[in-house]
Image 1 (cartoon, helix red, strand yellow):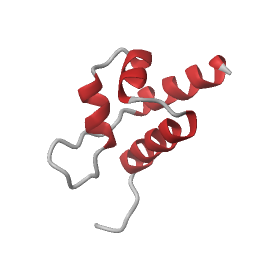
Image 2 (cartoon, one colour):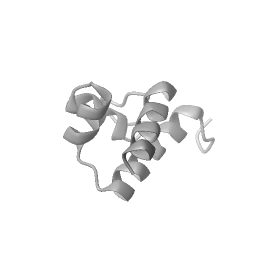
Image 3 (cartoon, rainbow, N blue to C red):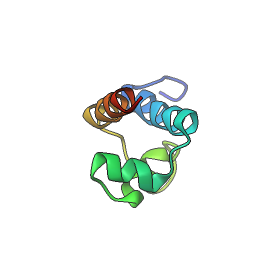
Image 4 (spheres, rainbow, N blue to C red):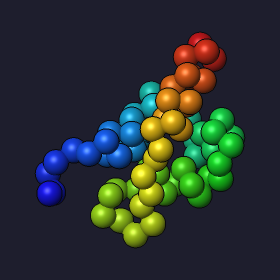
Length: 71
């Protein structure tokens, strides 16, 4: 199954792209989503890394919404 892009890969990659695009720190994202910075760190990990966590779709949607409203 390696090589296939899953929905969780998309949300985690989207998180990284949004953080880069808006120059957000782990702490800023954590505060916006009401999670710990460690959780955001786990979401940013590669899928095969120890500690990797799938970012829930609802969380990426919330972050996108908050970034849109903030502009």
